[in-house]
Length: 72
Image 1 (cartoon, rainbow, N blue to C red):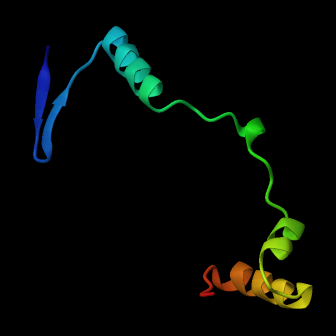
Image 2: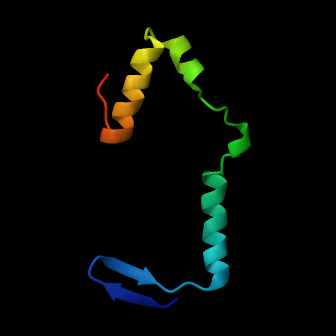
Image 3: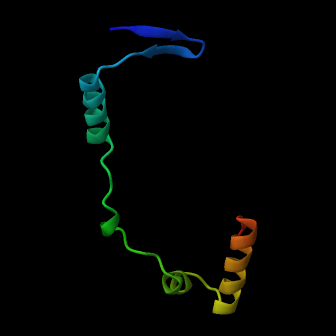
């Protein structure tokens, strides 16, 4: 195995087979979540779970879109 010295540590040169093997191990530990199984969280879902009027919700959405941050 060949390696290269780096100021932040060592970098190892991998063959394609070694790289694929490492990726397979990572994928087994961290499987990709199928996006079709995730339900969309809608405005109606939000309003049913909080004590907020729709007008206030629209105001918060506008603030969030412009400032990118809100404190509830």
